[in-house]
Length: 494
Ligand code: ACM
Image (cartoon, rainbow, N blue to C red):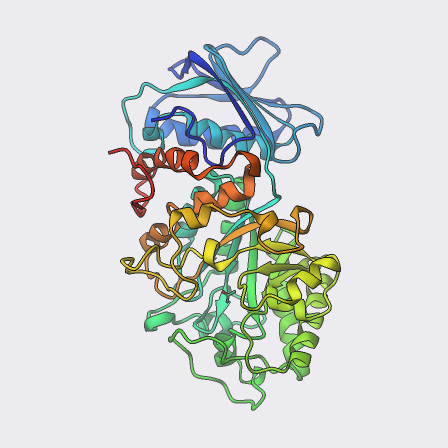
């Protein structure tokens, strides 16, 4: 197995053949004095390593003395390495991780984890030895937004399940968790001014199960857990369509004043808020206001996809109004690519997903709109791998591991270069995914490919090299008890 099977591929790697740093009982983790964030990054790393190695790995502030037998985290004190960049140097005596910001230390810690044997990811004691290969890594991301969306609306996933998903994102240096919190089949976040959204609208899911929702305290716990791992949560309240759960909870949101029945099927496009009525905007102001207060990150996602019951004029007027409500609560709006039919504020972001809708997206980028790219035939992890996959959908075709990996953001859309691309994001819609094991099976091994598309320089990316590096991660997922698809495209070790 290659000792340098890092995913996503770093900007540069220089191996020092024959040199190894072995972690032992006296190895310490040192962090820069005066940085609570760096100390927390050191503790998180120690927490992962202690479970399997059984080593004490005490974390303490560095002193001026030369740090032998240590994993040493250092902050450069300048911006040279960018927000998330880092350098890692491993000699026979020490591993030094240097970054300009604490986020870079967290990113570098993921590389360090991946350089240790796969068993290091186990949650119970394993024998070792725990050796890091000698050499140097210099690294920084290509794109600022490297995301994954989880649909907790079609099927509900618990706080613990979402936290585990966050752990897996962080391991691949993804930095955005987009939570699709509302849809026709369920409303998953408590809104104090509108309690029935969660208690009634959240009380079912696809297929008619009990559903569920996050209390605001639970949701804040997810956000904080993500933040500690340098993952920003982007909450989505999908409007004006995909709103049956809200329309079932509050009669006044319907143009005819009659509450809808709850919905447990999988059709799309039939529901809409009553966009001509003032009550709708009061509702959105309350919901988005509470959501903004729960969101330390800059973005609120307002959906906007697959609306089939409004005229283009009604739709555009609605989007223009909603993005101003988001702004009034101090946030920036992001919406699915259909929102490019409206006149967007300069800082509103559009999320590209379906080439069949096309058109307005490229025009919007000429007027300044930036894009998050989620092309369905590459980044929709709810698509089946092939005709034998029992889970998932097929409307965008089959998405094998190579499809998810072998594309480039700067050539996806004619006339849209890197400067208009904020980043990339995978989507996991959960119509057919009832259990978190199903989520993992569809996510792995495709998600690391999307992570590499978003992080690594385009010039160095080659499928044949990638599939070999990816293969080395199979044993890592096994150590973590992650359910994954053993794609025939990847030469898994046995
Ligand atoms: C979508 O897949 N409806 C954005």
